[in-house]
Amino acid sequence: MTEEFIFGKLSDGTPVRAAKLSNKNGMCLTVLDYGATVQSLIVPNAAGKPIDVVLGYESAQEYEENDAYLGAVVGRVGNRIGGAAFSLGGKTYTLAKNDGANTLHGGTRGFDKRTWDLCCGENEIVLHRVSPDGEEGYPGNLDVQVRYALGEDNVLTIAYTATSDADTVVNLTNHSYFNLDGGGSVLNHKLTIGAERFLENDNGCLPTGKFLSVAGTPFDFREEKVIGRDICQENEQLRCGSGYDHNYVLSGGTAAILRGAESGLCMRVTTDLPGMQFYSGNFLTPRRGKGGQQIDYRYGICLETQLFPNGLQFWGFPSPILHAGEQMYSETSFAFTAE
Image 1: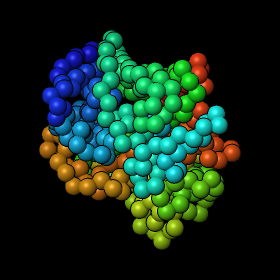
Image 2: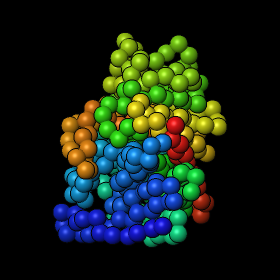
Image 3: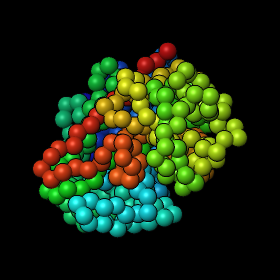
């Protein structure tokens, strides 16, 4: 079942539309046309108590004014591009430096700060926009569609499709912050990540091109462990990210399993993408969220499925190049169970 409504207005008076999608089990997804943003994702626990498992804001202007990317689709290129520039087809493209010397999540006004066309189907919400040639410095008119589908099996699937009329670069992901208890620190959540390697970062959280083994490090989540167990260890990579903010090289199969500490909710992540950025909310600052929910340091984690960050810089990284006339497609699913 779907329902459309006006969520609020931006500072210039532009209305922000929302769509709500629910299934027979009481799971309910709310998506905004601003940023193609997941504003709410309610999942009942085993006792039937509804729990909103993503961080979000109460008003449209809070999404407009804040830069934590809560629930948004980020692009054209999610994550970081080193030096805020890249070369393609013999030409260098200069981008905005919005993360030190680098470009982060598409630039100063990426996809998270754009209004998308929104339409609803019986069990899906579809958002579409054309990013014009030169937007944020990227080449080509990029036609992008994001489809959110909610199944009766409590599986949320996000599918991304993109085409361009010129060679360009694309790396789309969703930046939802998950908290399966509905609030409080996520350091007591349990996490499994299906990866034996992760990418080394420099001091700016930019991959160096080196693959590191998780074995014997705080980054080893091959067996389930509490997120906060090793996060304060003396470790150079943890220092670089002020905690976990690293791309994992997925082994295939299940990308991640997250379990709440109190709710009994479990989320299983699967994807056709090769990487996943695990970000432990290290730069979240105190503010009020929706429904009185508190947003604070490490109150949510991101599991951003993606191509590897800074992918044009290193041989052996999956290429983010989308050639003119070709189609980019990927999908990621989040399956919820109550225990």
